[in-house]
Image (cartoon, rainbow, N blue to C red; front, side, top):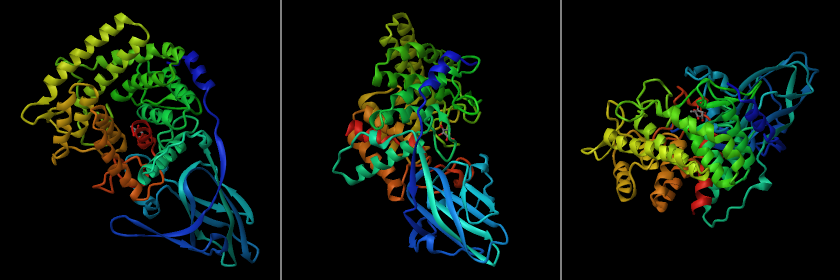
Length: 507
Ligand code: RAM
């Protein structure tokens, strides 16, 4: 069900991409230890290396890039008498160069793995790869070549693309080196995910997701301040709902704008929160008026999921509600918390719009959903919220109940404190869920604790060599992946750009 008027408004303001030529900074090699730590060694320049069968070079582009690779190829020896056969691997993190694409058996398509095999019939020539890649390192391996000549890479460049303009990046002043570094890495993450839309990750899935958009938008307001781009993305979602009016969880822009067939209870509701954040930042009443009906219908569609007990019905379907990339996490209590959170956003917006009757009704829904949440999910003996039939205890349930306002103040602070020490809880595995945890701490006035968490968690990625923040990070499990293999994990994932938002806004 396309709304062409909204779509027109969405497409009108989509940003243009800026291009920057990036050179190789050094030629390197890596070794690996048992803990999956990689050690980098600087090698002589690739421009001096004659490449024969089995040889390889690894080019380092100095920082994470999103763009197009161009290789200027030449030869030494006899006139080329056979094609050159190359394997080209792109890596956001060095660890990807040690993973074997053939061994990956996961459920998400292996076609995301950034690896090509190419035959080059004519040398000298310029090889331009058509695909856009996300990488810092490029490994070029000669699978085969005639023994009568050697290949020489005279030059390698990347045309990097992004709609974020670093000359517009607001300055961030700090005397703390770790904070400066985390901010830089976070801004780079956002920068490289800012393409025609806010992509979730430029390696994978390269598209606009609602849950990711909420966090990207917040960080963008404190950094690149491209509110027009947020606006376009909000209009895109509003223009492309399902038949019943519900938002899809993500959408595609090409060949034609189209919503994906994935729906998530929480992601639909984040439309309301993202619109509230956008309005708070811009005071753009025209957009609010345009998008309010869509936002409001997300609340009423979510309400249909409420069962007899007054709480969101649980489901076994994978991804019915996202919350975190943890396949054993029960989402029921979190879903209720997110419903409350979105209701609060809707109540705020109704206030701005002077929708008095609507606001009254939303408040009524909120109060019922809150008291039913306490009845259904609070466990007195465990002194925390539990979720689902199995009464599962997770960090996510507590965080979302706090963000939804089901529990407040001192009580909520103690709850989080108790949870931290509980070893048997289901913990968080993504910077996305961590972001919400930090937000909960800040909302409770625990600014110092929140800062320590940011330093430990995102700082943990920095100390492991992150140029951009990752989709998944579990300090206790370097092999964390919901996909069945880390080779398809994304290491530049926008939902992890929160440090730039938190540090700039609150510290
Ligand atoms: C991941 C995507 C995106 C997220 C969804 C739910 O696969 O990359 O970041 O929003 O899952």
